[in-house]
Image 1 (cartoon, rainbow, N blue to C red):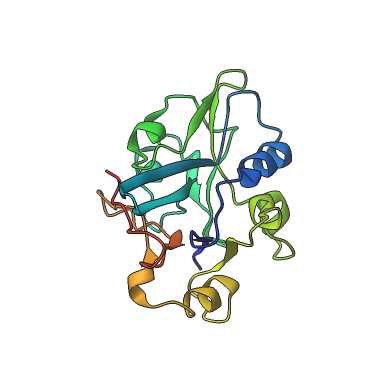
Image 2: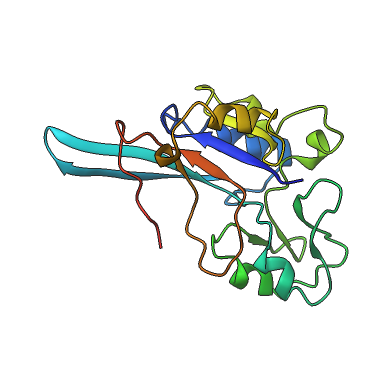
Length: 195
C-alpha cells in the first residue's frame, strides 16, 4: 500500500484552507505547520504570465530517509497503511530526521521535546473511514486521498483523467520515492523543479 495525497494544481486557488484545517484538526501550536502553500510566480512577461500554488507537506515516501536515520525507531513506515509516522514516546529529539528529510516538512515541538509532521490525519483515516482534514476542507476540490497502488482509489481515478505530462512529483535527490503527486496541466503553467 502507498497511501498519500494527490493535489490538482489546476484547481488550487492558494486559499490556505488546507493549512487552517490541518492546524485545527491536529491542534498545532502557533507557528507550527504540517502543511504549507508556496506561491510559484508570477513568472514570464505580460501577457504570458504564469503563477500557481504548491502545497507542501510530508510526501509519504516509499523509502523515507527520515526513517533510515532515526536511531530509536521513532520514525517508521506503518506496515498496514504505509503511512510515515513518528512514535512520540520513542523520539529523543535528536532531529536527525529533520535533516534527512529532503522536503523540509518536519518540525521540532519544543514543548513536547519531539519531532512532528503530517500523519495523513491517521486519527481519522487509519481505519479507512475518512479523509484527511485538508482533503475534506479543500474549497476547490483540489485534494484527493487514497492508495496509489489501487487503480480504483480516488487518487488513481483522478490521475487517469490527465496525460503523463501533467503529473508531477517533487524532486527525489536521495531515492526517497515520494508518493505524493501533483497535477499541473501545461495549459495553466509550467512545472517548476524546486531544488
